[in-house]
Length: 449
Ligand code: FES
Ligand SMILES: [Fe+2]
Image (cartoon, rainbow, N blue to C red):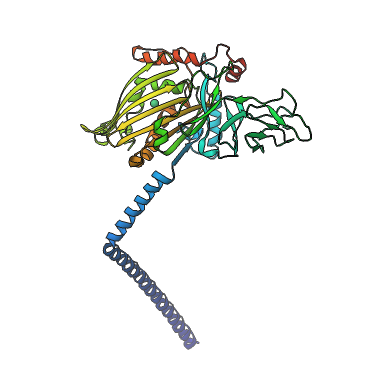
């Protein structure tokens, strides 16, 4: 009995010893594996590092070539397209979350509109489509100036704009309509409307009905866009729009595009608002650190501006603008800008820099009563194409600072002007020239609602 007990104890001890031995060898094995993989990683890392050092010249060359190729491609072959929707700018104060879009929409709905708001659609030329969007035979549906429009290009290459709705049974010509010669054909019963808007053919009828037509809009094509004349009193254009040499001879470098929630008067008024330039547009584009820590401004640099705005007797206003980007006492980038505002919807900026000239064409088009589509199209000579594409971005970043304010502000009909606001007052006063004598009451109602 005692022997049996002794044997059992010895067996148990043996079992425990074997178990310990096994676990120890497993631990050793794990340690070996760890060391093995650590050495492997180290070896691979050193091999990659050595190769990188050996081939560093070629790697550097490849990166430079890739960059050059990318810049040439962007500068000459693929113009920049920078687009921001309404909710993209000026809503940092609305915290992230899955329902953020709804909260932004709610904030927009709850925003007070302001006082003494002028009619939303002044008289003038307004861009409704991009030249590049409208090939021969193409039809576009455009919502602008409180209207639904049909823009198409006939076989003669001329872009035309007509009211979207067919006088027969009201089908939308821009939705499924086709171009025949220089006519637009309705998708519903195939009636055709000619260059002057008159119905020229009805299937199954020898003579088209007399006096049936669609409204045609005066249109021109300049600065890479199709513009229509809007006049609340139905007058013909009060001034012409013509091509300039720069858009004909320089290359198109791209455009930036924004949807802004504001009355259209706010946009041209920004040019006359000299005081806001150094308040809003001074912090460096390169880094927002200077905005947070002003003592860093000297190191990072900041933009300084001078402006001289004047209104002319006709539909134009001029602004002479200088810009300097200064780091410490060094002026790194100087621009002289000559700006011409032409009516409420068009501005041309001619910029002179040490690296060459550029032109920016701005269009402001009311999509709805307090909703504007603003596009800047940039042109520059071939030799400074790169500067042109940089301008598309840098101008957009500067402009976003205005957009962030517009998207949340109200319209103030009777501002508390001070002496330095003289040009804003003049601009607001001048804007009345573009408002029709017969204020469109239904448009006003939409604003108030
Ligand atoms: S609705 Fe246009 S042709 Fe009938
Ligand atoms: Fe501004």
